[in-house]
Image 1 (cartoon, rainbow, N blue to C red):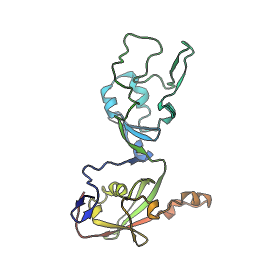
Image 2 (tube, helix red, strand yellow):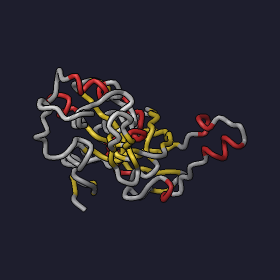
Image 3 (tube, rainbow, N blue to C red):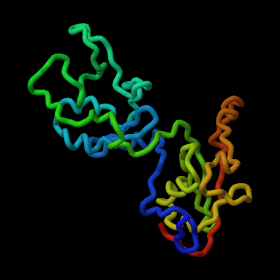
Image 4 (tube, one colour):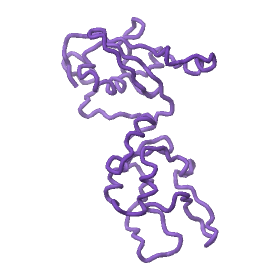
Length: 228
């Protein structure tokens, strides 16, 4: 484990998040900043949108910017859903919103540019991470300043990944000891693995507002001023 001053942990200059929440994906909903998610993964299609700027076949993709489009795909093949074309009787991609980039035309055309290596939805060139299937809220309380922030995090994120989310609120976050109910948290483990159970389902069953019982993580300053 590399060290930054007195604090052990990953190098955040090259640190990459593994998980993104649906709310985070939804923020990237413009042609110049275009993300989508499908089949459990998140993709940054901004380069694709810039490459084909002004192309009418980009329109169906622009319309779903920031959204989950898993319903476009066959989860077994990870390819676009297909159907029998009533006009030609051939097996073709199903595109209810209209034909989009890299989908062949219904009939042969001489002006269709098919010189791309792979369709944009195949491979991992646009992949930026995984979509959090389950999210939860936590409170982070800085005992030095008494500041409190509530974050939405993925259930499978490690404490280091949660710390990375918290950096915009506190650049010295790695200079603190993170605790829950008096116990130091294992930063390589998830909330659940640290004994912070997700009780949302129990609260729903009891018809109670889970937002009123958001777990609180306490941060205790270590006096080394590590800045990330």
